[in-house]
Length: 376
Image (cartoon, rainbow, N blue to C red):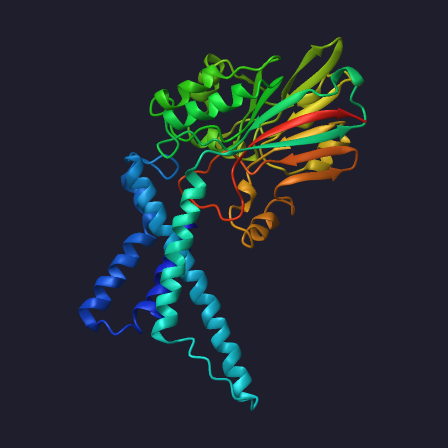
């Protein structure tokens, strides 16, 4: 599917930008080949450099390829907008109204390329910089007064890989530990690549510290990266992973349930699919129930099962303001921030990082979410 999108990018940009340029035959062929090479980024990563999610390339090469691909995508979007505007002007002129806007001129085409370069450069910087610490509070009606003020740091969509190497992960761990959280939860897409490839990059996570423990659930990328091996490695790192399971903590004499479900992509790998009933089986009914679910899907089902707070990621907040509404359509129209689902609260974090496939953020910053629980 990604390769289909890439071909559309190549064909449209070549026909609507390269062909009309006064470059001569050789110049147009050269420019067209350059666009083709950029558009085939995912094809090359998948077939020649070790895989789409975790290619075996130096970080600077991954960043450069991502920057060029995002630039091409922005050019495509602006060309489509230009051509739609051209069609509207044509219709207006056919209706007898004289409108003369040279939207197909050389300066407009140059402006499209320049704007795309600026947007992709700033967007790449936003994608790779250290995430913001975002502090937020939530009132839970069943929360005992003894647990008022409990703090949870949510780590989601960390995507440890060549794009996000050891030194970046170490800095993130130091930031989180400096917040002195009561709980740390990792809600999926922790890693890209095999345990062997990511051995050094993942190591800093062993340094995570929280008063009552570090817990995690699986995202779709854990399955792409060798689920069984990572299941063992996460345990070695001191992360208490919950796969359709829960644990009950006693904090200030009050029970608190932390549950986690698997990801729907598990079906493709013949692994257990998400099962909220199994995850909460045997959990005390009088305890606050916090669910780690990588995707914000099926929130109504989880609310009906008695979950008080669901923590999710996966969407990356849509990454780009405007475009993110398209992403929301694939996630039950839930994108980022707080949602009320019956008596349950749902928080969707924009994520700490991204995978290398489309490395850009515009208006949707990355975050380390610090959630303080308040008694209702």
